[in-house]
Image (cartoon, rainbow, N blue to C red; front, side):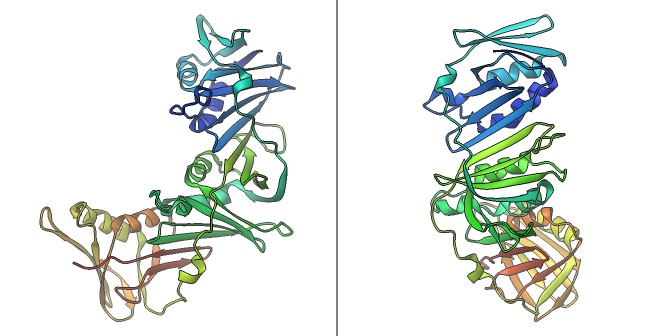
Length: 376
């Protein structure tokens, strides 16, 4: 295999796939990236056996065919330090790759390409398409609600559900729930899969803001595929393409519909930006053993406060309108900061029915539910 490619192109390719590399695996091959030249493209692949990322880059000239694996981190570090000039990669018979750029020359030993895990065949049974920015927005509005705790494995990911021309992404950690939805083209089959948190976060990083679509395909062996164009490309041809294949989390996602309350008349209306700032300042007084920030809700005001024996106290009054009986409710401040950062409208409406029942933000194509904490 021998190929010449511009340094910025090669570096971008490596940045796309490097998060799928597993440096800590007992299998040394998983710390490598597979480079293949075939037809008229360069293909880079990385996998940790749970998620695999493939980057297909069309080439102007037909390359010498071949395949080689190279330690991903070392290779990426070297390419990052090279000048923005053409880089030549030449694979030798002893699994060594020679990297040449200008006056620089590196010799990097690798492992046999035959030892690299086979990327699963793309034989899908169900396919939908959705614009990249739409799926990116669904992920951004839900990713923070996934559980980091391993005790409930089914919550370590997000439900991706297609039904009746609607795609939903739902995440919950048992104390809060985020649901975002968007319309999809008609005539597409229904499915529901639980995608691991690592894959969801990786998709959020890789998806672009252009309108080129994402293809989502349900595969055999409990896997799902996401295919879309890279920056400046087109998944239908004429540019670089990214394919992400991931194993799914097995099990039954919680019946989230049953915990979503009906719309309530007790609604607090305030400025999202002002509430976010007040909650952030009050959270400065929280400790590991005393996390709750207090909302005191009245007819024309919202007071956000926190008292801590060790640190002191914070209190801030905001202008607000509340249609309901005055109440005092305590919340984990992080649960509010996470959602307030991803919303766009400054006018915020929150349904508050009692200090024991969940607060709900209900917007078109978005719902957020958060449980209160007990007052000390």
